[in-house]
Image (cartoon, rainbow over all chains, first blue to last red):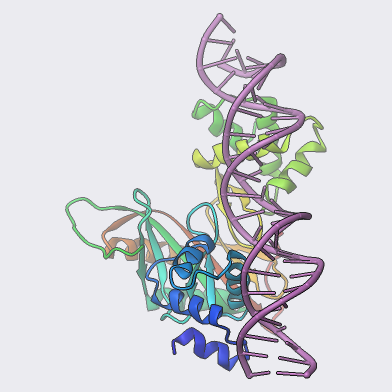
Length: 143
Length: 143
DNA sequence: CTACCTGCAAAAAATTTGCATGATG
DNA sequence: CATCATGCAAATTTTTTGCAGGTAG
């Protein structure tokens, strides 16, 4: 039983075979698949799942705070489980490669900014775009 | 002559009546319109402009770094001139209202993070989601 | 002039929905 | 066993494109 399934139970989301499988695939993913890609992966394990169900599930999960919807690249929306420890993304401007990172100072600063504007921070999204520095081999790759 | 037109000249983008008008409308906008909304506004001043041209123009402008494409809300992509001084956005989680802000500390921190990952920061996108604090009337509204 | 734009309408891509049936709790 | 989810196909919505003219530089 993965984290997503657990969240479903906790929220009274009926656990069907399809949802279980979609949850599974998402839990295992190290990248940020879009609906079509998700469907492709899910179909490999159960040929009977329809794209419509993937869309419906992903929308439901997002509404329940189980998934995050990203708009990194152009084209279709991409998804990632909220369950992973929170992190932000840096995108290699040349290759499109997505690198995940976490920085507590940024988080703190964001809370502070929101407070100054009269808001309580309930979420955020930070994406950096960068170009690899020469002669400084660094950075771990992520899809 | 607005900033967008200026950038077009500087980059050898042919200045047609349609582009001029789209540039104009975008320069005046205080919100973040999508292609359809942009088309509506532009058509009010020149009924002959097609939605296809709006799409083509907006895509070209984005490729040239003249516009930024946002994925704030669901649905269609929204645009905003890069020409405005750089800022980030805070979205009221309850009303969807977009508030613009600027914070130098965040900018600096981001450059630093990118550097640590072995990248030179070439751009970024930060969106905060917040809920209004009670009894602290603050914040300026933006579309 | 010539390369690049435009409008139109059709096409493609992305997402949603109605309906009859099936499965979950 | 009532409620909610699913598949399918059709409908919507968003964005792109081919083509025959038109226009900026």
